[in-house]
Amino acid sequence: MRKANRYIDIYFLLLIILVFSIITLIFITVEELQLSQYILIGLNFIMIVIAYFTNIVIGLITSAFLVFFYGSYILYESILYNNTFVENSYIWIIIFPLSTFISGKFGEYILQVQEKVINLEKQINDLVTIDEITGLNNMKEFIKDLEEEMSRSKRHKFGLVLMIIEIQYFEELINIYGRTKANTIMKIMANLIEKATRNEDKRYKVEEDMFAIIMPNTTLDGAEVVKNRLKKELENILIQGYKGEEKFKFDVKVGLLEYDNNINGALKFKEMAERELEFDV
Image (cartoon, rainbow, N blue to C red; front, side, top):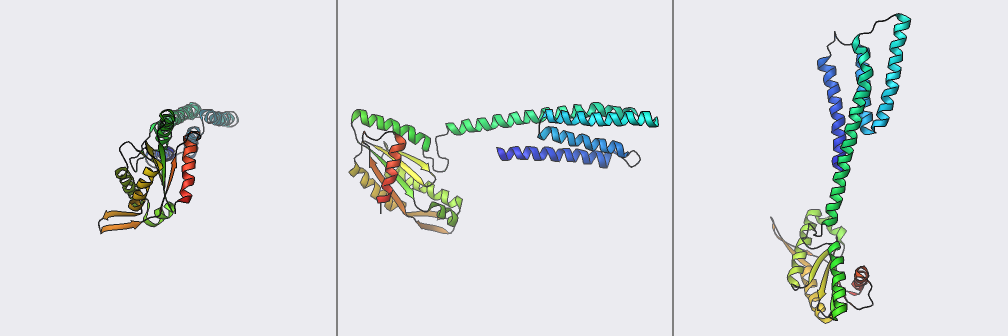
């Protein structure tokens, strides 16, 4: 959204420049051109830009100074040189603050709309619980579900195992194969994880290079069997490309930790399970 906001400002500035150019090149002929009027048009456009990109107060203060100096100039010319100014000379005293006010208000309302859109995007992101690449639940849903399973395990005294899967050297994977292919690989890995686990197991993508599986009603021995099967499948990934089948080999570490009542909170459980990755060789 911030990028779109920048484009709004850029295109508004380009529009102002375009209008100024049209007035200069088309509507003002050589015979009609007066340097003083041309300067006033230019100053008015500058004030419009200032009011839009700052705020209406600064724009009106700027226009007040301009009105003061321009009015003083008219009065000076009238008294000292007895010059008679045409009507459109005086109308600039109205045009300066009016155009500044309109531009400032326009800028304020644009800013309000942009802020509302940003807030809405944030609220939507806060509600999203699905990882868009793999289709698995994300970290937010993982914490919520893990807290529930820990509470259920503590209450009913059944086994609960947390499995953490980390793809080693993920940044290098992106650098070598590119982001698109890396995302494809993660999607394939997510599918393999779903196939290798039970329906009652809950699968998540908790970090860019990390998956997690909540395994209720499971012992450490039972989870170890799933771990060994998963490691074999995840370390060798096949992708069907336009050049045929490509094989990719990865270093995958898997950590397992069984829940006990001394573990305080889902984040602590995850942190302890991540430490088990060090022992997977």
